[in-house]
Amino acid sequence: MEYDRGAENQPMYCNPSMRGPSESATHIVCAYCPQLWDPEWEALQRLATVIGEAAVATILRTLSPTEQHGVALGFIVKEQRDAAAAATTTTASSGTTPRVQSLKLHVSNYVGKEGEPLLRWLVEVDTAIAARRIFDDPSKVAIAMSCLGGRARSWAYGHRTPDATCFGTYAELKGELRQAFEPPKNEFRSRAEFLDLQQGKHDVHAYAQRARYLVSNIVTNPMDEATKVVAFMKDLREDLPLPRVPKYSRSWDHPCHARGI
Image 1 (cartoon, rainbow, N blue to C red):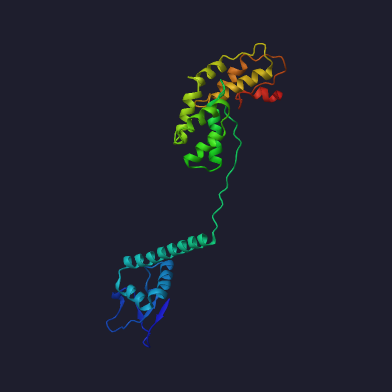
Image 2 (image 1 turned 90 degrees about the vertical axis):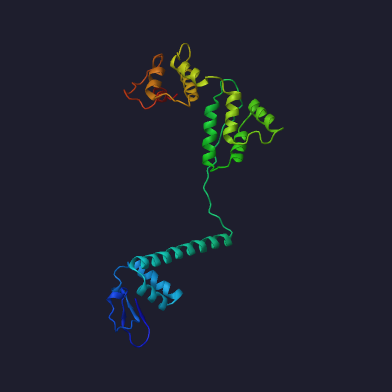
């Protein structure tokens, strides 16, 4: 980059100590400013179009290398901020907003029947809320209440009708549902029943369905697959040919899937 001012056309060094006493500097040469990186030098070129070449020449002649770096960097940051502000203004004036992808998932209704797994339903609702990118509590509460049925729906709207703020947050609604419909130690009972489950006179299909139901109730502290395999296989009758279960089976109901159950 060169700045020519006047007829003398003599080099102006960035470091004043490099100048001779008789030099009247009106010419800037990039090679004489080795402390500046190329992007910084280019930034100063653009700055010269804003504040004038004489002002940039003064900056290079009077400021220390550290201060010169600061001036260049400050102008680069200002350019970036101005560009971002211009882009925001353009987007706002066009009336368009970025489209956010969301996924609407089906959630089964919870009616509050005895033995109906509330925790599993809450997991379904949480998953659906996350997929739909819903973040505010009022919307979360509305989604959850829309998926209630039977006496659970009557209970929720019976509380909401006289007091529209009774479920202030989604966490509060979940806590109230647990207190109203979750039997004490429900997961503990499901775990104990699964570990003691026996096929008895039931066919393989009914036995497997009962086992799956009990396992689905155990949400807070799920059992590992090895425990499930041992508990399920210990009382499984050999009415039908049963494929050999691998030593490290990936799923406790692998034999049922193998039979098409």
